[in-house]
Length: 177
Image (tube, rainbow, N blue to C red; front, side, top):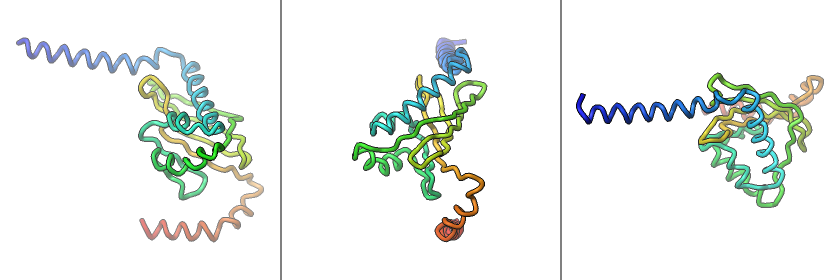
């Protein structure tokens, strides 16, 4: 083996080792510790919105993040959501969500996790769910989905309330696709 080949092999081994260290970093912590880190991050995410701290709030999202809101038309990239949300944060009052029940699940590498939570909000009980990823030494939200809950006993009434608007939206979507 010549010197160039030996050097290339050494560099490749070092890169592989560095990647292995990062993947194993999360395996070295317990699932409970990772879940605590994620829960703390999500609580801080909600706190940033309640305090209308725009920069802090959007720092919790990964670069590739998406946010799905309660309206069927609300499917945003991080950047488009930031533009939409800016006026709310600028007024000094965004939204206040408090988790009242949360479940967090980890993949076997502890690089990805997903969660669902029930939230106390100005819209009463909502459901938040999402995916988080370990990114550069911290957990980041890759996708967040906010849904309004509807008690089963009220489903027929709610369906009637939204039928005309959503029938029109469904037709527009189907024609587009």
